[in-house]
Image 1: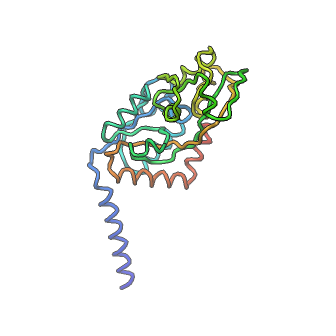
Image 2: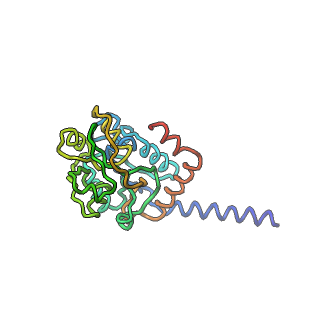
Image 3: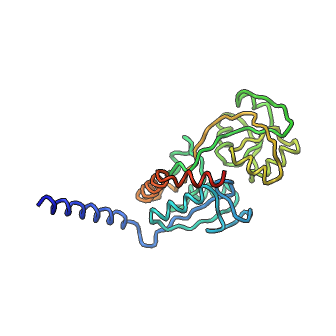
Length: 251
């Protein structure tokens, strides 16, 4: 009798789980957007437009496996610029964006799955430059370049600073080397990775002023079930070592 009850309970739980998964429409799909933000997400051919298999990187590989395990359909497109992708995700249901830095200011604007990876925020100077600062307040006397609507730029602006924002973070490398900006506010290791692609090495870390985490940001109208299934899949992948393996394969 007890065995029968146990079997019945397990069957009921399985049916309930299936019913929960069936709540999404058959044609439900998340529109995934990303940008060139190496080594986390990037076009295989280094161009500013790519789809599906033409995109790789730490976060891209993790997100693909996460959606596969969660049983949720998606399309994946890499576009430019970040500012446009950010606004699209804010405005359009079923849109999602990665790798998005989680901040308290952004928290109420999206639903979140993560973290996918950890990063740091830094001020970099050109090779041979002797600028030295102890705080962001000290850095305000210098001309700082940043990436428009990036979390780093938003943070500087929230501190009363006025960075010169570029539509492509790579533009800041040339500005730094040409002396048009004194410091480049960017994400580590992304900044160094981009600089190396442009043939620039030996940048100085003048200040490391924040540690951050990268997430998948979903439009606020995304069903909670989608968020829960994706987070569960990510937690399982991390526990199994998949996340560490992907990270180590690129760095």
